[in-house]
Amino acid sequence: MFKLVALLASAVITFSTWASPVTVGGIVSDTVVIPQNIQYEIDIRGYGEIESVRSLYDSQQNVVGYCYEFDNAYIIFDSYGKVMEHSPETNSPYYNTDVFC
Image (cartoon, rainbow, N blue to C red; front, top):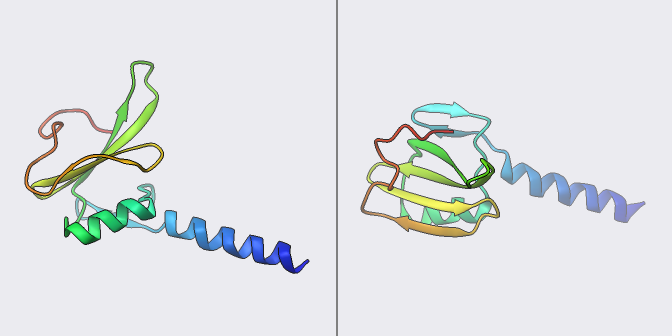
C-alpha cells in the first residue's frame, strides 16, 4: 500500500511541473505546457516572457514540435522536449508569419 501511495505522489509531483500556468504575450494561459528541461533552458538563457507559441507540423498535419518566441529570441523543440534550435539574439524563422497554433 505504501508503494502505491508513493507512486501516486510522485506522479502528481511530476505532472504538476508540466501543467503550471504560464504567461504568453501578457495573457496567463493554462493550455501552454512547458516541459521542465525547456523551462530550464529559458531560465538559464534569460529569454524572459514567452510572447507567442507556435505548433510545428509535419506533412500529415501531426504536431512534431513547438516554437516559443521571446523578445528577439526563440527556442524550437520537438514533441519529446528535445531542443532542436534556439537563438538568444534573433527572431525565429516563423516571425511575422501567419503560422500559429
